[in-house]
Length: 201
Figure 1 (cartoon, helix red, strand yellow):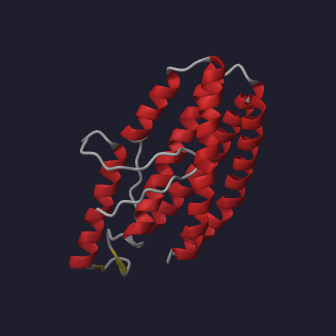
Figure 2 (cartoon, helix red, strand yellow; figure 1 turned 60 degrees about the vertical axis):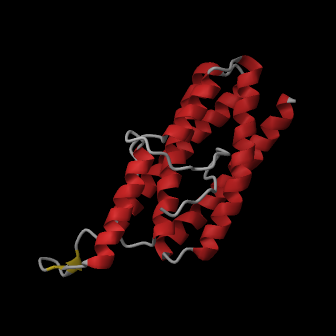
């Protein structure tokens, strides 16, 4: 499987594949690979609507990108909810609320795009992100706030760079349009996280 190690939306985590049968990200990647194998070896027209049936319509790097974005987006929402419960800093809580709102909206758009391209997305966060979530959940007070915001700054810096690269390199016009639409929001998230990070020092 072609692996990509860029970080999307916020978390500075390399996406390593593991063999856990319960990992929704791994299942989505496997499903997409299977569809690509099928489409490459035996593309058969659907005579009812003159379209190719059950074939994926983006290349593997783009489907991998979409899977990772979905994984990170769901993680952002879950972390944003955790912030509402654990943080005592209003600016951090407001940032977490923004993550919930913006990443829910982006995730809904991505689901629609994935449906058009016949790309399978994960339904729950991957094992790697669950571990990061669990580790963060063990922290409290100022330690929690700092760890959360530091992750947001580091991740968004990498994410903005990677989205810019994807905008230049992806072959799919619809994915490019979505990436370009999402980039300004990512940059705003980064600026906000940096400002909060300074205030926490």
